[in-house]
Image (cartoon, rainbow, N blue to C red; front, side, top):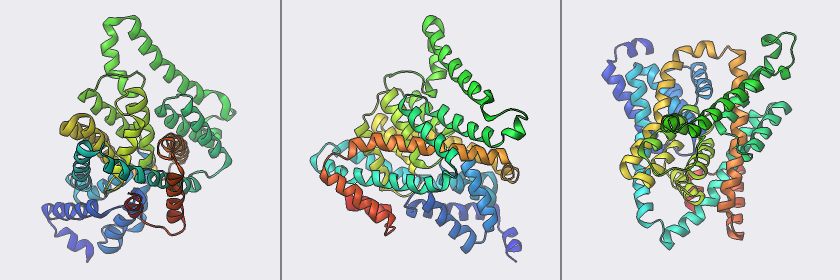
Length: 405
């Protein structure tokens, strides 16, 4: 009866249904990706019966196999199943737009009043709570991702290499491939051990090739601007004046390669916008994170705040489009492949490696941001109190942010 009733619904009606559901979730889904996914399951599996629990779990696994914001991709997957490609776009956009406009308004307030003592004290109280939220997420994810001592070693190695200046893209890809090859070594390389040299050599060649390309551009000025325009989004060049195209390409790069929790985004923002380009200070970055936490919807709308702070409304639109566009494309491509991906031993091992590499990056950026936020006994007390509230009493992170303020 359910399938027959669904067949009688016209595509416009289904699009309206998808838009209504995900606009409401975009307005009320506080608590981060895990909470978003739980709310989506309650709506589409238990209440509306669009799909089964088994199918929902397949979609959830697929969002972890591709880069981008997990909860937004989950919304797009569900919209695709309900109303085809138009549903994919409508679901994703509906989930993003409420947070986009809220963050835009808060960014305007920050630009106008952020330097006042009142706003400064609000953020002073919010920042330590944000550190606690990240620490709690790091602990929860670590318990699931570090399934063996070997995976723990990979995560620790990523943490150390990040502080040595290794590019975070190479750390994510290299960590994922290393674990995938290690766990499938007997099948992929009969007669050879894990340290046969194939993966380490491949990663090293890619990195050295990109470095040589940049050095070549320095030696031959006539190719410098062309090489810079292509390589700069990969995070290999130094500071540059603010530019709208570079802003868009930077966030497009992040949206196209970022795996794991939305909090891993912080590592990329720190490296690209603070360390490499010099457009933000660490203090401004943590302000952006704090403001992003008081809105529902995807964590990635932190990009909206940063874009507005750097380039006004056009900057906000460019940053938001850049970071979310890859997820729409990747969902459209990956959705038909989900049945095969879930059965692949290599894909599962790759995901294990990417997850522990993401945890290493999260730990590194938490340390860097914590040095900016935890500055006296009061901020130490706020961090500890927030950790207790999160772990023991399961208090919603929104109320903790409000309490910190």
